[in-house]
Amino acid sequence: MKIPAFIAFFLTLFPGLAMAQENDPGLPKEITLVDILQKGGWVMGGLVVLSLFTVILILLYFLTMRRSTVVSNRFMNASEAMIRKRDYLGLIAYCHRRSEAIARVTQKTLDFLTKNPNASHPEIREVAEAEGNRQAGILNQRISYLADIGGIAPMVGLLGTVIGMIKSFMDIANGNIEGAKQLELAEGVWEALTTTAAGLVISIFAMTFYSFFRGRVQRHTAELEAAGTHILALVGAQLHQAQREQPDLRSPARDEFPMRDL
Image (cartoon, rainbow, N blue to C red; front, side, top):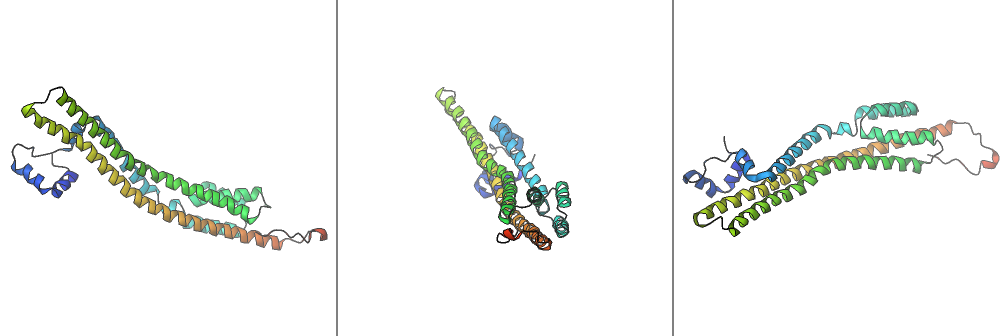
Protein backbone atom coordinates (compact mmCIF):
# COMPACT_ATOMS: atom_id res chain seq x y z
CA MET A 1 0.00 0.00 0.00
CA LYS A 2 1.13 3.54 -0.69
CA ILE A 3 1.61 6.18 1.96
CA PRO A 4 -1.67 8.05 2.52
CA ALA A 5 -1.90 11.52 1.05
CA PHE A 6 -2.03 13.40 4.35
CA ILE A 7 1.04 11.54 5.66
CA ALA A 8 2.91 12.33 2.44
CA PHE A 9 1.96 15.97 2.93
CA PHE A 10 3.44 16.04 6.41
CA LEU A 11 6.58 14.32 5.11
CA THR A 12 7.01 17.15 2.62
CA LEU A 13 6.96 19.57 5.53
CA PHE A 14 9.78 17.63 7.16
CA PRO A 15 12.15 16.64 4.31
CA GLY A 16 14.74 15.37 6.77
CA LEU A 17 12.34 12.72 7.97
CA ALA A 18 11.49 11.72 4.43
CA MET A 19 15.17 11.37 3.48
CA ALA A 20 15.91 9.33 6.57
CA GLN A 21 13.08 7.04 5.67
CA GLU A 22 14.46 6.53 2.19
CA ASN A 23 18.13 6.11 3.11
CA ASP A 24 18.02 4.25 6.40
CA PRO A 25 17.21 0.58 5.77
CA GLY A 26 16.35 0.19 9.44
CA LEU A 27 13.27 2.36 9.08
CA PRO A 28 10.07 1.09 7.47
CA LYS A 29 9.79 2.13 3.84
CA GLU A 30 6.03 2.28 3.84
CA ILE A 31 3.50 3.51 6.40
CA THR A 32 0.00 2.28 5.73
CA LEU A 33 -3.20 3.68 7.08
CA VAL A 34 -4.03 0.30 8.59
CA ASP A 35 -0.76 0.40 10.56
CA ILE A 36 -1.59 3.83 11.96
CA LEU A 37 -5.08 2.76 12.98
CA GLN A 38 -3.74 -0.34 14.69
CA LYS A 39 -1.00 1.52 16.56
CA GLY A 40 -3.46 4.15 17.77
CA GLY A 41 -5.41 1.61 19.80
CA TRP A 42 -9.07 1.81 20.72
CA VAL A 43 -8.93 5.60 20.92
CA MET A 44 -8.11 5.72 17.22
CA GLY A 45 -11.31 3.79 16.60
CA GLY A 46 -13.28 6.58 18.27
CA LEU A 47 -11.49 9.14 16.11
CA VAL A 48 -12.36 7.16 13.00
CA VAL A 49 -16.04 7.30 14.01
CA LEU A 50 -15.76 11.07 14.54
CA SER A 51 -14.12 11.54 11.15
CA LEU A 52 -16.84 9.53 9.39
CA PHE A 53 -19.54 11.47 11.23
CA THR A 54 -17.85 14.73 10.17
CA VAL A 55 -17.77 13.73 6.51
CA ILE A 56 -21.43 12.66 6.62
CA LEU A 57 -22.46 15.99 8.19
CA ILE A 58 -20.52 18.00 5.62
CA LEU A 59 -22.08 16.11 2.70
CA LEU A 60 -25.52 16.46 4.26
CA TYR A 61 -25.09 20.21 4.73
CA PHE A 62 -23.94 20.64 1.14
CA LEU A 63 -27.08 18.86 -0.06
CA THR A 64 -29.65 20.43 2.28
CA MET A 65 -28.33 23.81 3.38
CA ARG A 66 -29.16 25.76 0.24
CA ARG A 67 -31.11 28.92 -0.44
CA SER A 68 -34.03 26.94 -1.88
CA THR A 69 -34.55 25.26 1.51
CA VAL A 70 -34.89 28.65 3.23
CA VAL A 71 -36.42 31.03 0.67
CA SER A 72 -37.45 30.07 -2.86
CA ASN A 73 -38.65 32.31 -5.66
CA ARG A 74 -41.48 29.89 -6.38
CA PHE A 75 -42.90 30.23 -2.89
CA MET A 76 -42.49 34.01 -2.83
CA ASN A 77 -44.30 34.44 -6.15
CA ALA A 78 -47.13 32.11 -5.17
CA SER A 79 -47.58 33.64 -1.71
CA GLU A 80 -47.58 37.18 -3.10
CA ALA A 81 -50.28 36.25 -5.61
CA MET A 82 -52.47 34.65 -2.90
CA ILE A 83 -52.00 37.59 -0.52
CA ARG A 84 -53.10 40.05 -3.22
CA LYS A 85 -56.20 37.89 -3.73
CA ARG A 86 -56.63 37.81 0.08
CA ASP A 87 -56.75 34.03 -0.07
CA TYR A 88 -55.18 33.57 3.36
CA LEU A 89 -56.65 30.12 4.01
CA GLY A 90 -55.37 28.93 0.64
CA LEU A 91 -51.92 30.30 1.46
CA ILE A 92 -51.93 28.50 4.81
CA ALA A 93 -52.75 25.24 3.04
CA TYR A 94 -49.98 25.96 0.51
CA CYS A 95 -47.51 26.57 3.35
CA HIS A 96 -48.29 23.14 4.79
CA ARG A 97 -47.17 21.58 1.52
CA ARG A 98 -43.89 23.50 1.36
CA SER A 99 -40.69 22.80 3.31
CA GLU A 100 -38.98 26.20 3.15
CA ALA A 101 -38.28 28.09 6.36
CA ILE A 102 -40.17 31.12 5.05
CA ALA A 103 -43.23 28.87 4.64
CA ARG A 104 -43.17 28.14 8.38
CA VAL A 105 -42.92 31.86 9.16
CA THR A 106 -45.80 32.70 6.82
CA GLN A 107 -47.92 29.86 8.17
CA LYS A 108 -47.50 30.91 11.81
CA THR A 109 -48.22 34.54 10.95
CA LEU A 110 -51.40 33.79 9.00
CA ASP A 111 -52.61 31.27 11.59
CA PHE A 112 -52.37 33.96 14.23
CA LEU A 113 -54.01 36.53 11.96
CA THR A 114 -56.98 34.33 11.01
CA LYS A 115 -57.60 33.41 14.64
CA ASN A 116 -57.15 37.01 15.83
CA PRO A 117 -58.56 39.28 13.09
CA ASN A 118 -58.44 42.33 15.37
CA ALA A 119 -54.73 41.93 16.17
CA SER A 120 -52.57 44.99 15.70
CA HIS A 121 -49.58 45.23 13.38
CA PRO A 122 -46.99 45.07 16.23
CA GLU A 123 -48.61 41.87 17.51
CA ILE A 124 -48.53 40.25 14.07
CA ARG A 125 -44.92 41.35 13.58
CA GLU A 126 -43.97 39.87 16.94
CA VAL A 127 -45.37 36.47 15.92
CA ALA A 128 -43.50 36.59 12.60
CA GLU A 129 -40.24 37.58 14.28
CA ALA A 130 -40.56 34.84 16.89
CA GLU A 131 -40.99 32.14 14.25
CA GLY A 132 -38.21 33.67 12.14
CA ASN A 133 -35.85 33.54 15.11
CA ARG A 134 -36.83 29.93 15.72
CA GLN A 135 -36.05 28.97 12.12
CA ALA A 136 -32.71 30.81 12.28
CA GLY A 137 -31.92 28.98 15.52
CA ILE A 138 -32.60 25.64 13.83
CA LEU A 139 -30.10 26.48 11.08
CA ASN A 140 -27.44 27.50 13.60
CA GLN A 141 -28.10 24.45 15.74
CA ARG A 142 -27.54 22.12 12.78
CA ILE A 143 -24.05 23.39 11.99
CA SER A 144 -23.07 23.56 15.67
CA TYR A 145 -22.37 19.80 15.52
CA LEU A 146 -19.26 20.55 13.47
CA ALA A 147 -18.04 22.97 16.14
CA ASP A 148 -18.66 20.31 18.78
CA ILE A 149 -16.59 17.80 16.84
CA GLY A 150 -13.87 20.42 16.44
CA GLY A 151 -13.65 20.71 20.21
CA ILE A 152 -14.05 17.03 21.08
CA ALA A 153 -11.63 15.47 18.56
CA PRO A 154 -8.41 17.02 20.00
CA MET A 155 -9.44 16.00 23.50
CA VAL A 156 -10.03 12.40 22.39
CA GLY A 157 -6.67 12.38 20.62
CA LEU A 158 -4.95 13.77 23.68
CA LEU A 159 -6.60 11.07 25.77
CA GLY A 160 -5.09 8.41 23.53
CA THR A 161 -1.67 10.02 23.83
CA VAL A 162 -1.87 10.19 27.61
CA ILE A 163 -2.95 6.56 27.82
CA GLY A 164 -0.05 5.51 25.58
CA MET A 165 2.45 7.52 27.64
CA ILE A 166 1.14 6.02 30.85
CA LYS A 167 1.63 2.52 29.47
CA SER A 168 5.18 3.34 28.34
CA PHE A 169 6.21 4.76 31.71
CA MET A 170 4.57 1.85 33.51
CA ASP A 171 6.87 -0.44 31.53
CA ILE A 172 9.85 1.64 32.62
CA ALA A 173 8.77 1.58 36.25
CA ASN A 174 8.29 -2.18 36.15
CA GLY A 175 11.72 -2.68 34.59
CA ASN A 176 10.35 -4.14 31.40
CA ILE A 177 12.43 -1.79 29.22
CA GLU A 178 16.21 -1.90 29.65
CA GLY A 179 19.20 -1.18 27.46
CA ALA A 180 18.46 -1.72 23.77
CA LYS A 181 14.78 -2.07 24.50
CA GLN A 182 14.63 1.69 25.12
CA LEU A 183 14.09 2.01 21.38
CA GLU A 184 10.78 0.30 21.93
CA LEU A 185 9.88 3.13 24.31
CA ALA A 186 10.49 5.69 21.56
CA GLU A 187 8.31 3.66 19.23
CA GLY A 188 5.58 3.53 21.85
CA VAL A 189 5.73 7.30 22.28
CA TRP A 190 5.28 8.10 18.61
CA GLU A 191 2.51 5.57 18.39
CA ALA A 192 0.76 7.37 21.24
CA LEU A 193 1.24 10.74 19.54
CA THR A 194 -0.57 9.56 16.41
CA THR A 195 -3.91 9.91 18.19
CA THR A 196 -3.22 13.56 19.01
CA ALA A 197 -2.23 14.21 15.40
CA ALA A 198 -5.39 12.49 14.15
CA GLY A 199 -7.54 14.46 16.57
CA LEU A 200 -6.01 17.75 15.43
CA VAL A 201 -6.53 16.88 11.76
CA ILE A 202 -10.20 16.07 12.39
CA SER A 203 -10.62 19.26 14.43
CA ILE A 204 -9.08 21.48 11.76
CA PHE A 205 -11.20 19.84 9.08
CA ALA A 206 -14.42 20.22 11.09
CA MET A 207 -13.78 23.84 12.14
CA THR A 208 -12.89 24.86 8.58
CA PHE A 209 -16.21 23.64 7.24
CA TYR A 210 -18.02 25.03 10.29
CA SER A 211 -16.75 28.51 9.40
CA PHE A 212 -17.84 27.96 5.79
CA PHE A 213 -21.36 26.85 6.68
CA ARG A 214 -21.68 29.55 9.36
CA GLY A 215 -21.24 32.18 6.65
CA ARG A 216 -23.84 30.42 4.53
CA VAL A 217 -26.29 30.31 7.45
CA GLN A 218 -25.81 34.03 8.06
CA ARG A 219 -26.63 34.78 4.42
CA HIS A 220 -29.70 32.53 4.52
CA THR A 221 -30.86 34.13 7.78
CA ALA A 222 -30.62 37.60 6.22
CA GLU A 223 -32.63 36.41 3.21
CA LEU A 224 -35.22 34.84 5.53
CA GLU A 225 -35.56 38.12 7.42
CA ALA A 226 -35.97 40.10 4.19
CA ALA A 227 -38.56 37.66 2.83
CA GLY A 228 -40.50 37.66 6.10
CA THR A 229 -40.56 41.46 6.13
CA HIS A 230 -41.83 41.47 2.54
CA ILE A 231 -44.63 38.99 3.34
CA LEU A 232 -45.61 40.94 6.45
CA ALA A 233 -45.72 44.21 4.52
CA LEU A 234 -47.97 42.67 1.85
CA VAL A 235 -50.35 41.27 4.46
CA GLY A 236 -50.46 44.60 6.29
CA ALA A 237 -51.17 46.50 3.07
CA GLN A 238 -54.01 44.15 2.12
CA LEU A 239 -55.60 44.34 5.57
CA HIS A 240 -55.33 48.10 5.54
CA GLN A 241 -56.98 48.23 2.12
CA ALA A 242 -59.73 45.83 3.27
CA GLN A 243 -60.51 48.11 6.21
CA ARG A 244 -60.84 51.06 3.86
CA GLU A 245 -63.20 49.15 1.57
CA GLN A 246 -65.51 48.14 4.43
CA PRO A 247 -68.52 50.44 4.99
CA ASP A 248 -68.29 52.62 8.09
CA LEU A 249 -70.62 50.84 10.50
CA ARG A 250 -69.32 52.56 13.58
CA SER A 251 -71.72 54.47 15.78
CA PRO A 252 -71.17 58.22 16.34
CA ALA A 253 -70.18 57.50 19.92
CA ARG A 254 -67.26 55.38 18.70
CA ASP A 255 -66.03 57.79 16.01
CA GLU A 256 -63.54 59.28 18.43
CA PHE A 257 -61.87 55.86 18.80
CA PRO A 258 -60.80 54.97 15.23
CA MET A 259 -59.80 51.42 14.41
CA ARG A 260 -56.10 50.79 14.58
CA ASP A 261 -54.55 50.42 11.17
CA LEU A 262 -52.33 47.58 10.27
